[in-house]
Amino acid sequence: MGDGYVRKIINFRNNPPSFISYAAVGGYEERRGPLGEKFDLCDPTDRFGMDTWELAEGEMGRISLNVAMNKAHLSPDALDVLLAGDLENQCVASSGGLYSFGIPYIGLYSACSTCTEALLLLSTLISHTEIELGGTVTTSHNSAAERQFRTPIEYGGQRTPTAQWTATASGAFVLGHGGRVKILDGMVGKIVDGLTADASNMGAAMARAAFDSIYNYFTLSEVPVRDFDYIITGDLGKVGSKILEEMIERDMPDARGRHIDCGNLLYSSENADIHAGASGCGCSASVLAAHFLPELEAGRMKNILFLSTGALMSPTSVMQGENILGIAPVIHISTEDVC
Image: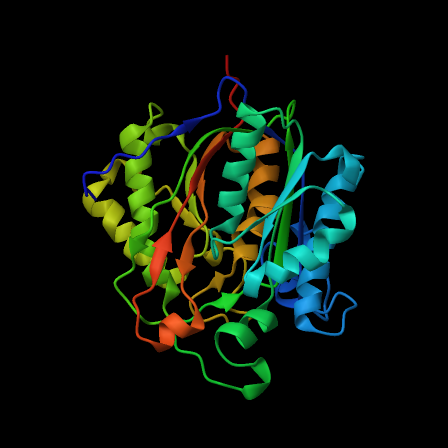
């Protein structure tokens, strides 16, 4: 993938942040999916007691952070900082849903890669500054996203087979020190041309960025691919996963068979008309909180490479025929003891 630029792995091993608590909140389709029983809370109306889909997304984020803090018996003033993002314009779901906590706040936008971006940045703050305890929240809402990026659900527009279903989901995480599951290192994502302008095929648009990050990480890392249980992408879905796995087969055969995608785990095609799988920044966040972190806590996994994948586009850029750019920040999550 060489353009001559060498990226760097950010090392947290001398002072690794760990997951103190986490929570997954979802809606109707999320509850019906294979991971539904693992969610902390699901609202069958998708409204979370609010009058609009946009307000519902903000409330969903508020609930997920509240659940995560309650699990650890923490009050908001215990957190030094909060990093959050969503898919709404200017990330108003995050700011509107979380302002009542009064926690110092950093708003983020990296499309569907926001979950990993937030965890990477918070890990850097905890490992290398005086920040001791912080939280991240990532949300997406199907109806809010459809209204902003495409057409309202009520319009009844037909989706192409390559289209994915934006998750109505939120993942909240509290990081600090002393937990069993740690973030050992990470790598900032690079903007990669997805070589497609088709907004109904975001999996394909993000696949090249995912491979770029995986390839560069293992080129630089001292930890071999064989030590990882899974290489987990955020929401490539069926189409993007197939493209990524073909690239891995061609250029990284030692990583063959280790890839798994959150967009292929969240829903069952038998229960929902999801087409090519799940998407939305709440997808990878909720799957990490509901499934992968509990598996690590239970000792059924030891090392995972986690990279949410983002499609950097807007309705305007798509209408103007611009290619969709992708990005995929990386974190290494582990239960290994570090010296």
